[in-house]
Image 1 (cartoon, rainbow over the protein chains, first blue to last red):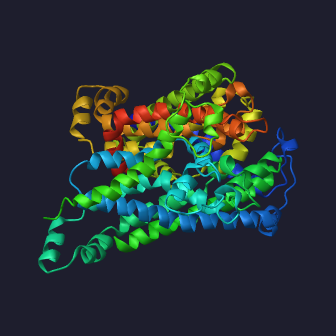
Image 2 (cartoon, chains in turn green, orange; image 1 turned 180 degrees about the vertical axis):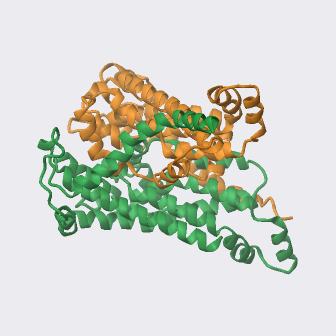
Image 3 (spheres, helix red, strand yellow; image 1 turned 45 degrees about the horizontal axis):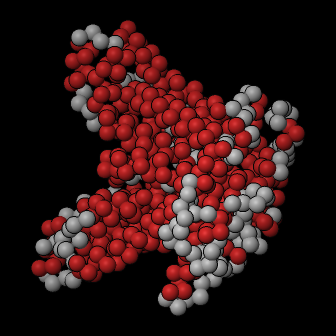
Length: 293
Length: 272
């Protein structure tokens, strides 16, 4: 009995540093963010965060009525709904080709395709701002070689978001590709061999064997990618400042902007709305995965 | 055979590789170009007259030396903190019995995905009231532990053989000694994965440093680069490309050294 009490005490010594740091810098702010979102906290209340007016759901009502927040939410939805499928499609194509199509230099291509993932989004956004320039940008120059007159990517409200999505897909498909590769290696080769003896072509084998077995991986990757894309911030901050005509302002960026204006209560409410969407997407993933397994 | 070598596939793969890598090549080459050449139309590929002017200006006129040092200090300390504290919790969760263990693991699982955008406003209030605003500890303390790190270490340690511990306990070794001398040395692969992921995350982190570092002496590299690139004063494009090169190339080199272990770590943990 004594030894189990002592063991329990030893265990708590191991978890104490984590509990302190996590409690102060994550758990507490998460709760206080919720509290703040029901108050009219502004930057003048910085030193007295609890001496503020309670305003109920006013901040949330204000967010839903705020045309700029609605634009930001719609832009974020656009970024996620187009960006995630595009990223996964490129990643899956690359993974399948590397897994089944070639035998030599696989590690080399894998490494090359993965490289953008490790780089700072701020740094690549700075570089892509040049690449996307209308007159002397590398992308429009390359398009010119094949006879296409490229748009003024970041200056045209119709093309600004596609440009950011393109960059995000370029930077992020490597992660999904690596996870797909691991998933593909778990598909038993015997199934493919049996199917090809039965005369199934490679497309049918992919469609009816690989894809169903890859389903949990697909689900996992799409959710983690969506969670990342739901918070996109650096790209518009560096490349467009949310413009032109607010065509690229994101929910995170608008939250940060309201924080900069000193509207802490309002910013907290919007950050909680983003949080709720992310929580719903995560919960959905757990459910779908459980149904299958 | 199932795995065929289809030679024609090397053509689209090579084109794709060029597309993926060329922004980096253009960035590095551009960082050696003069201002006029960067703005020239059509754009040049190789620098006509390469010089280190952009880099010397970054370190003399702008304070990129300070920013680089800030980024490095923050990333190293955050990484060390995560390696130590997360493996301690991982050990307790995987190997020890104690009251509240299930609840603690539940909290870790539930908070794996809390995004920075949820906590930055109250965290800013907290940091200002603690007198930590505009200091490096404000950039470090909130990131010293992570639920993801705990999860990773716990999952790895659950797979270690328990006999080793029992042998240690019979010999009368304390838990701290068993942890440090027996368990940690076996955790090399997990520690490497966690270390690289944490370092990269910290080096590239942007939102929180942007919120909390309001004096140039506390800027990290991404903050300095973003603020310079969006600044009102006339921007020199050569400096921007050289700045981006300084942010990207050091981690690129580290990555190339550790890439095999790193990519395998991603594949097994499944989380970036």
